[in-house]
Amino acid sequence: MKITVNEILRCFHDIAPLSLQESYDNSGLLIGDENQIVSKALVCIDITEDVIDEAIKNECGLIISHHPIIFKGLKKLVPSEFVERIVIQAIKNDIAIIAMHTNLDNSSTGVNFKIAEKMKLKSASVLQPVEGVLKKIVTFCPHEFADRVREAMEKKGAGNIGNYDGCSFNATGIGTFRANEEANPFVGQKHHLHEEPETRIEMIVPDYHVRAVISALVEAHPYEEVAYDIYQLDNKFHSVGAGIIGLLPDELTEVEFLEFIQHTFGTIGLRHTTLTGKKIKKVAVCGGSGAFLIHHARTAQADAFVTADIKYHDFFEADGKMLLVDAGHFETEQFTKELIVEIIHKKFPTFAVLNSGVNTNAVCYFNKK
Image (cartoon, rainbow, N blue to C red; front, side, top):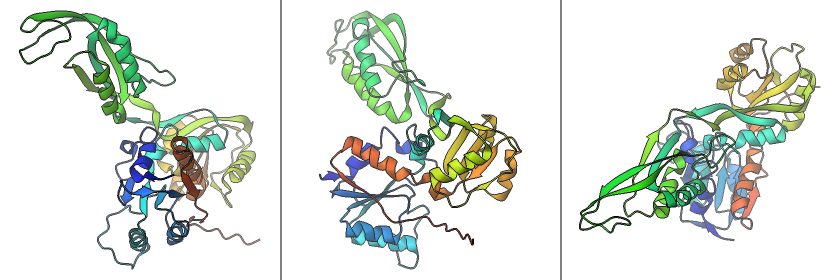
């Protein structure tokens, strides 16, 4: 099966739109033409020169990585550093490169929820919900068209609040308008002020669905000119954000929990805070560098918080109130490859997606027995 790079990008639009990436990030199409046709894609956590060689060997015209190979600005393209060498090799071999990083981290079905799935956590929810993502769309239409308009908006992503969908507020009122000579009014007559009984419909929508919802609204609405308002909301969007928190199927001792983490992530060695003898049931997780969430995990009364890249002084922030575990950056994000493959295959079941066999973990462990 052959598809365009842009079609692959669109697979992630509803699940992990680029608007969810952090301000410092560089997710999306990094190298290549979105109209390029590809027949195979290679999925990896990081892009190394060995990964490029693997893509060339397997005739993959596209690489999808979790971490962006171009993270800081490139001032020159000479083969003196590994990033520049990788970029040059990708361009020479007509290989497009996509990165799905913090947008996939912050997704409601993204990296951290895949980790929660592997850990069999129950009642998983976002640890630090994002703010400034939600908007409210308000429109007005004749009563008999209200159901059609609501359903059209809902199908494009409006009206979801937590575990509920189809959420809207509706009120009745009178709309007034006067059609001029150029108009083609659905109701009323030209040059006469018309009063129409209308339903006011209010629905919440994430900003990355606004355009599609407005298009659906306009298409379903009977009026020639559709009136609608868009309001910015300060509400937290609890469906997306950083980290997750959930419950283990069974309560574990701290040693049992550490053994469970080591087995789940395949980590050779774990760094952790002093054992206190407390039982572990409520667990917070953040794949990759998640030390910024230590306070949030404590506030949420997690018994343990598993993440990576914890600095020495960060361990003190646990303050004896929870077990803080550094399970490794690569190790905690390794399941992202599986997640990306699943996302693409859900949309394009017959498209060839290869899981990279290259170990790109930059951290090695020395353990003399």
